[in-house]
Image 1 (cartoon, rainbow, N blue to C red):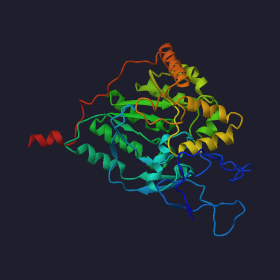
Image 2: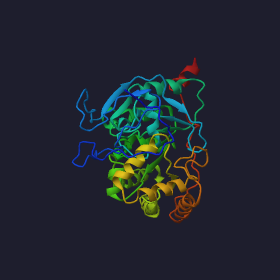
Image 3: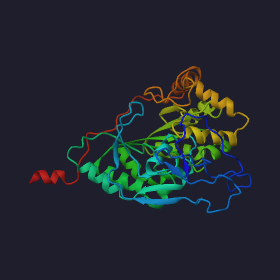
Length: 373
């Protein structure tokens, strides 16, 4: 057993590229290439040498769905810079495998790694619809919009198997509970009928995340997501159905995708988006280690350039936890990204006025009948 209480601020070291099942050792179809250490665990079991055979078996590379009967679902969001009051997540962990995802660190609370475990071990909250109904029925709930999801993508591949997101939307529609959604998966179109009905009551607002039109980049940076072309199709079809649609450019990574900002915003506007948002990359917790490893293996010619530009966007660090700055960064690099965003936001009409979801029509089923007696 190996003690893993290492210095969290130590410079990340790339893992050997020779590890893994591919011909070149690269795990295709996965974002993270390593399992980072869980800061909550004292010990870990690891293979120190690639030729070692004693008492060792390779981890299961297939995605595993772990059913969980949670006690709570809706969480209050205290952060002032994420644009939401409450959130709910039907799935923990995400098979999309986006290498930059800040939500990876949450997987450590479940006893897993923020690396490959985050993509392979998906926790499924089977009782989420019942928990939401119980939450909304509570007499102390004063209606405010709930974000679906605030952490992992609620339309990741698991949704096609379990359908929990649709069931949550059905509960929200029944209660007239407004929701905000964000996704990078065209599976959202399976629920077009329900989303359109909620939009007619001003109960839903949607952001579609688009980070690159470069398919070679997307395949390694967001390996199990749908293409940018498909994401534009989501915007187009739902906006034509009367749904308020926006585009999320996040994160913008200097040296990798920030130069695509104008093209993305122009295309989103042409397909029906009316508002937009963006974030500047930040590498929090274990994401710092796996992102550097990923960058080293995929872009060895520009590792230092990209890394130093990220540092320049956060005052010499790759992460900033200060509210108001952590999502936008500071310094000349992040300022340039912000200026581009503001310019193209106005140019392509993506600066629609703030649009309030309707919280006035919220109702608890059976409440009206109860008052009669």
